[in-house]
Amino acid sequence: MDSAREKNTDTGTLARHLRGPVFTAGTEGYDRERTGYQLLAPHRPATIVGAVETRDVCVAVRFAAATGARVAVQASGHGLGGALSGGVLISTRRMNGVAVNPDAGTAWVEAGATWQQVIDAAAPHGLAPLSGSSPGVGAVSYTLGGGAGLLARRHGFAADHVRRLDVVTADGELRHVTADSDPDLFWALRGGGGNFGVVTGMEIGLVQLTAIYGGGLSFDVERVPDVLEAWRQWTATVPDELTSAVAMLPFPDLPMVPRALRGRHVAQIQISYAGPPEQAAGLVRPLRELGQPLRDTLRELPYTDSGSVFDEPDRPHGYRSANRLLSELDPDALATLPKLAGPSAPVMCVAGLRHLGGALARAPRVPNAVGHREAAFSLTVLSPVEPGEEDAVRAAHRTVLDPWTRWTLGRSLNFTFGPSSEQEVRAAFTPADFSRLSEIRAEHDPQGLFLSNHVLPPGPAH
View (cartoon, rainbow, N blue to C red):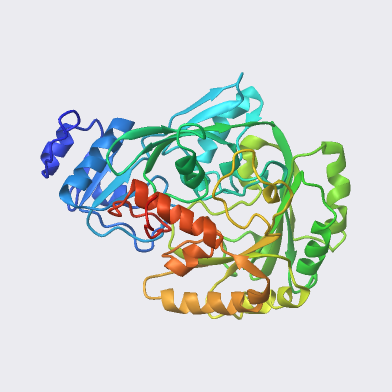
């Protein structure tokens, strides 16, 4: 199949051309392989290829094209959008190698590597990647969607630091894509999502960093009702080295919840400061003056422990979310959040605000497809979901987000967990960039072979 391009449609023949395993429905390991971190509506492919090298990906794509099947890709499974029914799922979790070049300040990251694996490989060299708040997320898929992480206001989007991408396109061929070799595809892959092929690896630039000042301050919203407004005002005073967010969620009164948080509606201010350590205490003093926090985990910490800043759950579960990119935080709209997303909401809601701006607003040296750089803040609302609850969750999310219509610039791909309509994908880009992305998809995947988490409709090819 590999050299002769044979059009075999038998999975037994497919398996003989692969180093990695093949799974079909009913075989041992099939359910484990198709399931990632997102448990709601997982993929149900006819065939799963557990790729261990780039050649496996090429073979799998050719097999799918020969059989008329669609292709989806999954590493950690955090950002699952539309589920594949039938077709071929390429599982890249076994392709998790990371190679750091300390002299060049770069890392080569394979398709299935998580950010924690990249962080751990870079740390001995005094370097760090532009990783996200949850280090268990796949580094490649995160970067294809843009990636605004813990160092974002200082260094920009993760996509801004990509030097090269290896991608298997719909013809089953491997392309080494750079700004010089294929400027259109290089532009599209960095911020346009997974619509253009299977990225098997990427070369990224790292930054010199070993530690940050970070963690969280958790306040009881009932006792400190002005916490969101105080954070909004505080963000106008901080330098680009400081990236922060607020997560607001109601904690149940259950034994597994830390005692200080049980039964409370909590606003957790999350901070990552990559500037001079001696300035950190002064920068966060206005927040500490809001009142006695329920928890205070702010401290200097090695970047290898950066996942503790947001302290996000690492247990797989089902969830859905929606988001908005905002021009500003209106105080009146902000005042609606504690009620609309609080304990009285019809479903449990986790409302998250992130401070953007800084380097995120500046154009990268090599342009890419990341949209709405002018956004000053993002707002995300996320809910755990059991089967049959999706309609209620969507309605609750619309209620939370409706007060922000006037200040909405668009949406972010990376904080959309669940199926996205064409209109929602359009909202992540300017009209001109959306048209250009659709044209590039038509050029490289004219038959719509690839099922991305955020599907671009193929437009007229160049």
